[in-house]
Amino acid sequence: MGESLKDKVGYVIAVISEFATAHSLNTAQAYRYLERFNGIDFVNRFYEVEHTLSFEDVVADLTSYCHRKGGALV
Image (cartoon, rainbow, N blue to C red):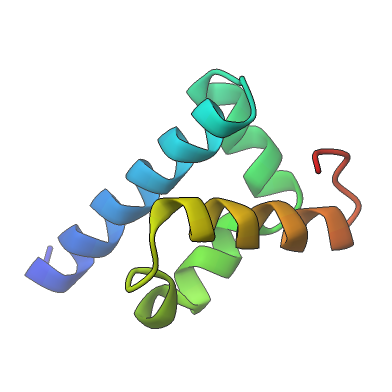
């Protein structure tokens, strides 16, 4: 696995953890929610931009994106 892929995987794991904390979920629940409403895909596609933002901003982006895709968390 290349260094950049390792960085991306580590970042996605950190984002899931931060999302879980922000929404009072455990990490498994957060992962399932983000997977269901395409949040993981969002982070993967926009990694180059999202990883330059604070985790607070990324969680806000993900919350808004998933809500537009049918998620109930706001």
